[in-house]
Image (tube, rainbow, N blue to C red; front, side):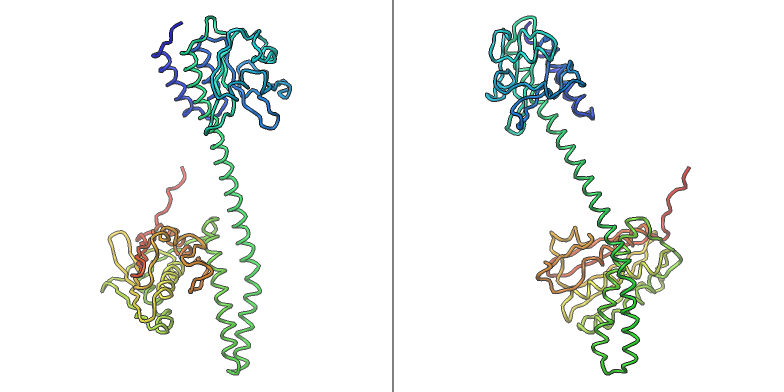
Length: 414
């Protein structure tokens, strides 16, 4: 039968489509083997996969294979088989008289339950290495060069299907591992935060009591204890804030709040920090605008505090930090601009990630665990807002966030 190129291309297109539409590997391989038998006019077809451990082949998929049979007894040897020859030579092979050809394994006849008269095999090669063999059997006429091209093409598609299946399984495994690691991480954070709260509370309470009792004799030492214990308390609260948001525990208690007042209060609390570094801390607010929004005031104060603390920390002595509040029709915008060290372009997309540090942990000059901005991000998003950063290394940064006038509520369930 002459090679029908139009039929081949049409059938090849069908098989290619099935590779993208079908979910499981067996269905994809069934389509390939069906096309191989049909297009070459063969009685049947098979796909054998090479096993490096046993140095033999096993049937990856064959239409006639008994799934309940002992597959270990269905191994086809590397030497003395058509599959082994095409595998080792990385070339296709036509065998016209299989029963009298030493390259044909009679075990295939036993497993298939048919006498193999003729065969055509092609290697399945993935990433430059042979991984198996695609074979068709018992054509009424002789196998031709056109048949060989068909089987070789379908062998290439088989390699793609098998490789894609491995990649998909790898992705699913990686996703499952990532989920488990994330669960363990959140569990560790929750347990650690809970266990640290009680002893830390006792340290702060007794330190404050002792400071008053000692009446100035050891003020410097007691201040150091209180200051560092308070810092630990901030870290724990930051960890808990992110964890509560991610696990859905965090709640927003909105009420009508003046963001202008929040800016005033937060800036006042950082005046001492700014003065210590001789940094000019300015506020820019639109006259007559209170910047009223429905938000949880405490959480928004934390957002601005974390951003402002970063701005002052990463601005050199004598620099400037400007906090600006703007009223828009549907939202309020708050921005913090500094003329500090700026953020490298490669780090900018990650500054809101939990534990991300722009500076190397061995060489950095500034403290912190990389939690402040991640906390700010989750708290802004809890209010239906958005936060972002613009920066140029060596020239400074602008951190901005917007808050809708009213927090959007999800539609009621039907």
